[in-house]
Length: 117
Image 1 (cartoon, helix red, strand yellow):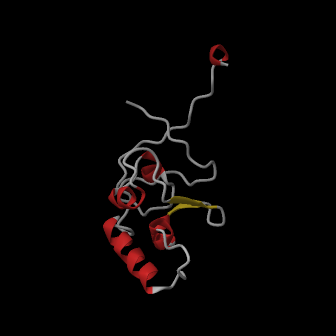
Image 2 (cartoon, one colour):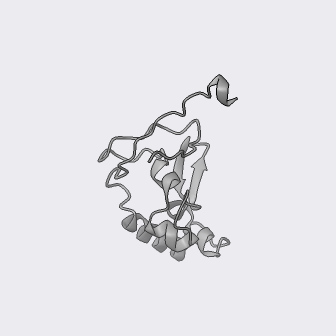
Image 3 (cartoon, rainbow, N blue to C red):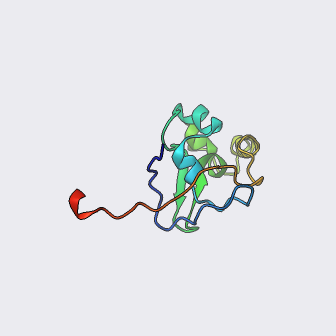
């Protein structure tokens, strides 16, 4: 059954399965991965650890950017040992760098008909 997932208008288009991740965010907007479930305690809907980077015009996993923020220790410096270890663990758990594994189809929302306005 089709679902509507709202994506930032500047997000790149979803790559084909197996191609490098480009930060389209579709997978994380559809549902949290196991790491997202662990850190946000959310099992449905968009992952709360997903972040939009306006500078890069792409989505980023917050657990790869500043993981301690999602574990209640946001005051730690980015290069602290806990942040480095959690980034490394998170990257391994989500298979960062392996390629897109989201077997999802992205389609634009059709314009509303005059009847539905």
